[in-house]
Length: 526
Image (cartoon, rainbow, N blue to C red; front, side, top):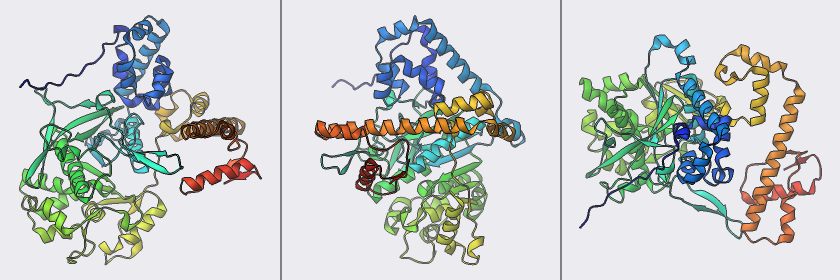
């Protein structure tokens, strides 16, 4: 029987456009409008159809059309300027180098179950992932020596659509990894880098993919390998999918597998950051690794690693966090106890609010809280709520002294700034305003911007949002077979001159809000 071979066919770019491939493989382009406009110029319709994915655009764009672009001096010049801008960004002095040079290049590892970097990398579901993505982008801009660690999902999170009756439905779509801005990590012999994680009665292999985010890397583990069983290949299929069995294996792969991937690549982080409890098993693997390297006791290794562990709490209710029954923990970690130097009871106590309560489940946030020195909520109010929820871990402390602080969620400014607002900042703050974002003197110049300019841009942005909403609503109504006589209504919903407040609720409530705004019975529409 003939063997099975895998071939990857990559189209050759004309010599004049070779820099496009380098630019496309570093998603620095996604927060720089010059780069976005460059890809949009190739073919605006395909750029939109391919979810603004430059790799897919270049690989599926007709070669003859690329040859024509190679003869366009203006386009070639734009490509060269983009490459020069990227090179300058990658090689320029950073905030970290100027302010933290004495601290050296101690690596920081940021573990998260999801990363929302761009729609062409659909490995996220919502706010948790968007925060993680913005965290990595900001680290790149500041030059912080950080690496991200996550999972590469074959299907990612479900996508929503409305059926003919107006009810929300979910659908999963396969990700074509080879047409995404990700690259397989290879070892010194040129083979794909692999790590192995012990699961009940077997080992699961995972290869490592890398996403270049400006100056830093995000490493994603992928179990969709021929050497794994069909069940194990599904570990990295869906984000937050499956039952408790699948969830615990995913979190083992993220935490334990993620840390092993770093050490296998020669990265020994001084600080490990857990974004939510999904990655808490990382702290256990870090203890095991240190014991293996130094011969420390469990208590010594715990204290040594704990000082370099950070934990960010997100879910403000105890019931919304991952927890596993004792039987499932025993099934997946009984082999792990000896390498930690503890028994089952000691292991279970690490994830329990009341260590001696045999009936209590193993809670991932509790594990992360107990194995971290720095813990934070994502707003001042959330920090206060978190101290109340988890205060029983520190029964001898008053609630206001529970060691959980807070850092209000921030965003990566360039990723969320409109083209018009960016141009406004460039006119008044200088074209390099984003490179000096930590300079307070730079932001003092904002007071020189006339209020009228802010308001004019705000008005245009609101008009664009209403136009976008109308177009999407009309397209949705057409898909559902709405009569032509009713389609005209979609072109009138919302009022760009009114303050529109959308209240939380399901799709039916939002639909009612749109209907109410149609009547225009006042300035506000809800």
